Length: 145
Image 1 (cartoon, rainbow, N blue to C red):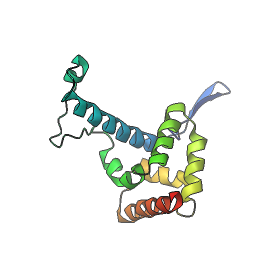
Image 2: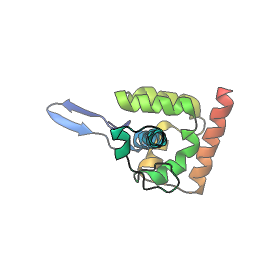
Image 3: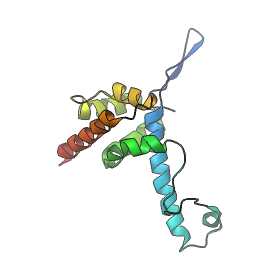
Image 4: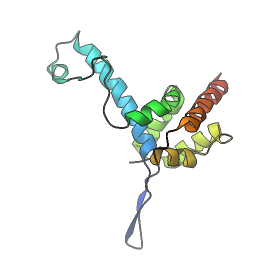
């Protein structure tokens, strides 16, 4: 399920709205964190399951190949714990509107959720957009304090 992807039947036709990068970025980041924690447990636990886990990364941190450029791009937003948790839950249950509403409530004076998703979907990573993400992160920090 993507945060902007909706599939529904209308007059026996299926419609698909494209664009699901933002939840994939969040989910990839969360998966990487969880895998890193599991790999750390491997040192202290002799579980058969944990022995099967492999990590090709010399750093010890697990990094899946998918979406790494986008993850590095939106990393400041991934540090916003409540936003990350909400995005993960919204992706899991497919509540697109809840997430976009929360995003718009936080950042509407900077960018809309729709426009931000378009940046991610089109992989428009440039210096201006990096500044935009930092501005969003700083605003988030002011909001939660």
